[in-house]
Image (cartoon, rainbow, N blue to C red):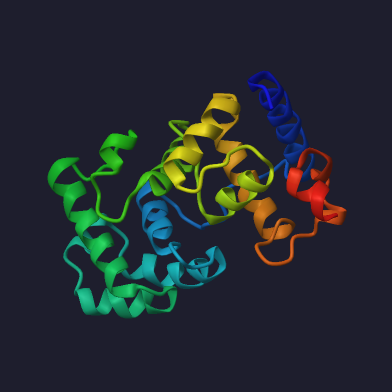
Length: 215
């Protein structure tokens, strides 16, 4: 498929996603950029629903970045245990808090380069924070849903997040990057599931090589 044809098809996919998910947004609950960072770190290999079930108690126990920095690590682990990988996540959260206090005056930075200096914050997490907390589009969130759906839609043939993101950024207008990531996550959860995608009833099936083959 020629480059122009891929861009035009990507535009049609965006229009379809806007019809399906006009209010697509990050589904993690938070009250500040730091709380969003914590919730996003916790969401690795865990559902947003599970994260949202434990963050009210977590945010109440540790209302400030300073509280996380000086928290008893074992208590922090116990509060986030149900999200999985709790020891690694607790360490990432505490060390990120300490780095913010030491190097960023206790403020969440607003660039990919600075955010990815925090432990546990790779490009996906950084893109979530920038897009959701600040409305800044430096890239496109590529999680497991975006990876799967963008491949099935024929928007990329890559298998690793960074090359996938690069392909998507070349096809999707920058002003749509934030929406596109959230919408593809929603589509992956609600329609284009990993094991049993609902191709026959999918609004995007005529634009989707995988859907055309399997519907």
